[in-house]
Length: 299
Picture 1 (cartoon, rainbow, N blue to C red):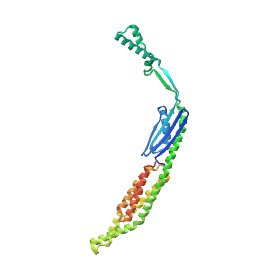
Picture 2 (cartoon, rainbow, N blue to C red):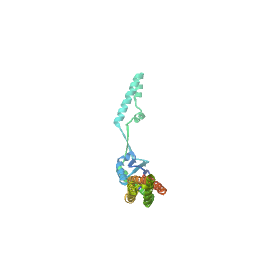
Picture 3 (cartoon, helix red, strand yellow):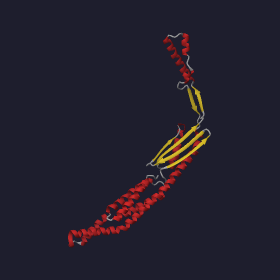
Picture 4 (cartoon, rainbow, N blue to C red):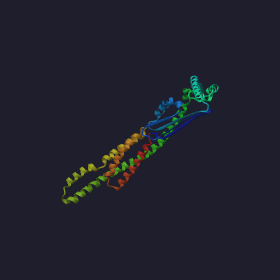
């Protein structure tokens, strides 16, 4: 059994190179995976996504991959065509302005000369190109990622085992409640019969047909006995115990079984006439609510 909350972190630090992977998760009805990585590594997203989905079934999972280099290998190229175009255009603008202002020819020639800074500031004149070998970075990143993922999975498993212990403890409370209801069932039925017979006697006096009363009591007892609820309750508890042991990802199934258990406990409570049984119903509902709360943390 795994919890849906977990954390894993690993990093690789070299002299001019830093790489880290952080993975954390929270509760979610389904798998909601978000991978955040530098744009230069974006082509590796599906590769790492497949690794996570192979290890995780449910949860809001956030993956952060960080890369920092002090001196990345970068080359700068000159776009010669852009330089010529900008120089010609700037020179033409300068010539037009000179003519408009009536400046002398020699002065116009000087004005028409394009400053180097102006040309360099134009878009597309200088083109930087970072030399990036994706396969090399993948080879460096994969073991770091795998280690962080292993830590993350182990953390979820450790927390899941703690949840399992708590769930089994609360399941024990419910099993005790089912045994308590079973013990009280005959007395509940006997008291129900006595109450009905007394009411018939009060209404009809001594001359009532006892056989007919017993027939009516038997018919009503089918409706008000808790035997069927106890049988179904024990069946659901058995199914819940099996899920906790056999199912590696029982979160959704636990929630469904708890709904069925709640239905049986509510019905038993509605038919109850004893303070002791009512108190046990409250105890059982409290344990069940704790299970349902914890099930929201289980993968």
